[in-house]
Image (cartoon, rainbow, N blue to C red):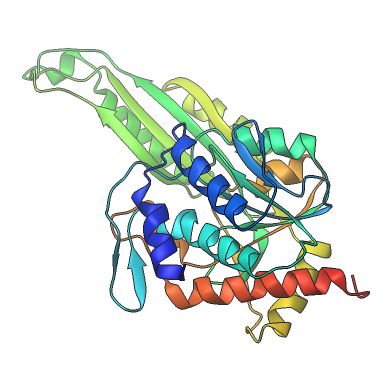
Length: 327
């Protein structure tokens, strides 16, 4: 099956986090048809479980926002880039290999809690290329994150008597201005108020701080909690340290890209990925894959088909590199 047809089939199977059974069954059947032995571990699909070098990506997507279409260069649709383009590249490459020198894992629940990669990281060990959209640039610098939700509290009053209440939305805006002095962030969600002509007494704000590899999320967390708790209740959703990739995974990928005739270039990965959970357990890991991160999770998510085809060639070259004496 060619890349466009296979990707279209994968995208047609909706697989939001927690509902990956159908796509997992499709991938398993596909792999069995090409003669590979498949195992299932905690909703993950695993090949060559005893390997010490891995190619890893995830099966789940955000909820469906756009159907598949192809314009001759780009494929569009929910998950085409994050990360079904990577799945397509892996499956096409595996069809062409006589023997596998690496393990493969298709993980669940990346877009929500990351529980499946946390489980996988504890059960296995080694080096890994985690496939996420980097436009085929090697993401050697992976950002950390601090994601918090603040329930800002005010005091209700009739809308015509604002002096008798405390407007929770206005307090949230004030809090956000002060938080900007600590660190840059992204507002992911803000919710407050009603149609009842009343001063809002609750405003929920979800904020994501992106941290460079040399920034410590623990130090920032204390400052954020100290400041935001003055305005309401603070809940830490996610906390993770960034890292820099310098090990075998990066070296093998560089060599394989050169072998496949793909220009080697570098990038940063500012978003959370399953690589974070692997790194926590001592894995050597690097992030790389087809597609551009900027459009992911949106109605205009897209991936260049030629990048999927290039990625597939690189995966075949990785197998050749691992079978050589150089690595």
